[in-house]
Amino acid sequence: MSSIKPWPRLRRGLEYDYRVLKVRQDMVADPRTGHEHPRVVIDSADWVNVIAVTKDDQLVLIRQFRFGTQETTLEIPGGLVEPGEDPAAAAARELEEETGYVPGHVVRLGQVHPNPAIQSNICHSYLALDCVKQHEGKQDEGEDIAVELHPRSAVPQLILGGAITHSLVVVAFYLEQLRAQAGGNR
Image 1 (tube, rainbow, N blue to C red):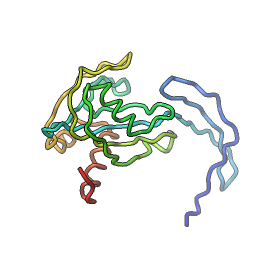
Image 2: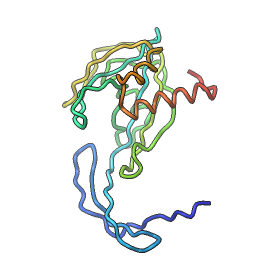
Image 3: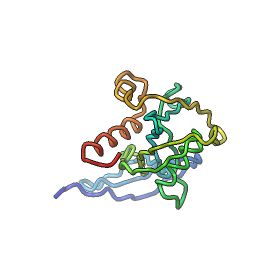
Image 4: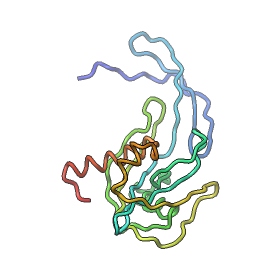
């Protein structure tokens, strides 16, 4: 049994709403000493990531510019879970919006906390199988996404070679590998 106690929030700070996330600084108390400490909290809706695989074993990947790193990255499709939306439905929706591909079926791989030190949300990972291109995609305002197909067998080289660097994308592929090792359906 853990002896770690929760840090009570003494005061909720001002909240700054940036549409996709909210940032605030709360004052909390150290449960051991009672001393006050400021802590930044980022609230966001849950996220989904989708490893999309076509019927001929090609990965549907996306390339887009990321403002945090000021670089273009290679990733799997994903996005925000809308209020009240089932994460599996969000995964299929985001895949179709970003790429125009529709899955034959979607399999849950797992979930992680992106950064529990400062973030409150969950990132859900899914495997979308038997994906078929239905249209060119319907990107949201402010998105500029290029769709690329890569052999599924290239995943280790894409990650180890530095083509895929997004940590939550790497986690999704790791969850897929763990599920396969545990005997999960592919």
